[in-house]
Length: 304
Image 1 (spheres, helix red, strand yellow):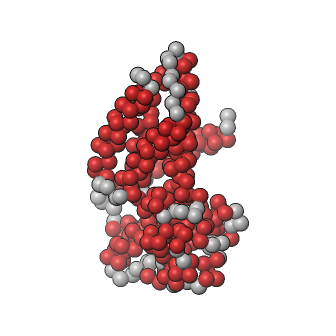
Image 2 (cartoon, rainbow, N blue to C red):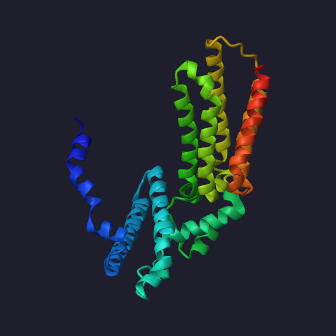
Image 3 (cartoon, one colour):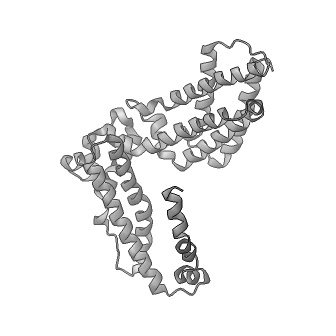
């Protein structure tokens, strides 16, 4: 038996016991002493504050660019998310005993905020590192303690989202390839549509990062995200042609340039909703109609 399974079995009593802990049961019942809850929130904020600083320290000292970018983004995520939420309600909760003052906002958070504004307005290529540092209120030396330059800084803002989109699409194609061959025609459209829905929902939830990738990343590797998706889709399409042939279907010759144009058009059409900040409430309907449009077109081209 693997160590992880042994360890999991041994902690089951403690895990199950946590659900009946007085803190949780009293909180659920509405009988928890407010002073206890207040103390919990203070400790939670203290933990997150120093956890964010730990990530920032890792980002500052790490040598590997991927680790540096990941740690920097994690630190900023805590500062801009979890800690920012707590700053909003601590003045009321603490009655003036604020845990997080304005001066306590991390240097990394200010750098990311200034960089995001600069990149959103001017794009990566035209943005000035000097302007970012000035807007963040930090010295150039302090900046280089976190990043080697503008490229690493841009990566810290978008790399996680970029990897998610590419990874989600690649995973969907892999899952489809693993289906029994006779089931693939039935699942072809469903699998692709489900992946598009997942990617689009994620894109709306991370709108600014996706906008930076789609419209402000010229001069970085991230500007090629659509092209990478197109290459994955074209490869998957070719694999599906072979499936149809193995099942006894005739597959007509499709000009490779036309194929590339069609797939590129489809990918760009999906992300137009992000580029032009269209209402998310309409996204599902738009995606359904795009699927019908492209499915009908492909069936026509393939003589089905």
